[in-house]
Image (tube, rainbow, N blue to C red; front, side, top):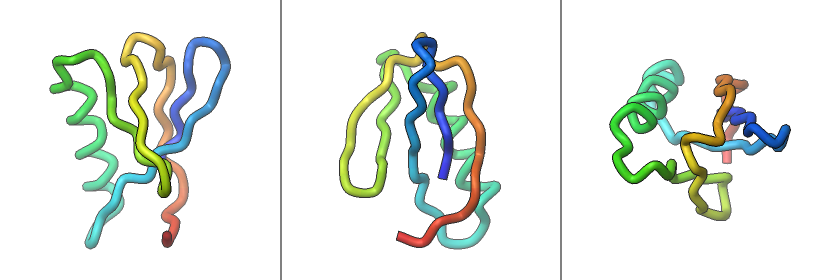
Length: 68
């Protein structure tokens, strides 16, 4: 589970799926941010998918592992 704070004080949660190591999952997520050429980051909240404008993100924080 990754918490994403936006510039309007909204908080969004993303679930990055992993099978072995949650640190690897977080690093994969950050790599997606760095390599994203569209300016919009795909977000998966468990049941829904959306996209966030990378310019609106002010903080990304890894949280606990969650089984879904």
